[in-house]
Length: 163
Image (spheres, rainbow, N blue to C red):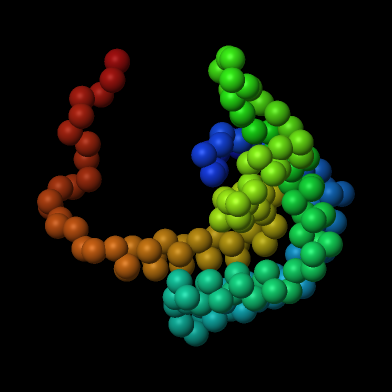
């Protein structure tokens, strides 16, 4: 199964893709709240969704998620995640995330949501829909950034190739 490493909320983590049985359980629990996200993706056919549309879809999805489903999903994603934590004496080492959820995410819910999104992406729940929403977020972010001057370069790197 696929494994990925990311830094989230100031912690380095590794998540392993979950097995099909657990994945199916999560997929079924996400089906109801995901309708809000599908609505945003479907709107893309008629207009390009804005960042606000995506946020509205995410808020709608969270509003439709039951607390028991959220607990289940967090627990299952935690079971397939390890986090590197300093032990105060040596270099950080990896620990199972279920034992350290509060240490990693208490008071840092944006990081927890980023971690949950990572789990959904890694396991390819709603694959192409999330890809399209990510592309919308990227476009919206680029439109909100101030324009930068173009150098007219062809995009080729001027650095010498490494040996």
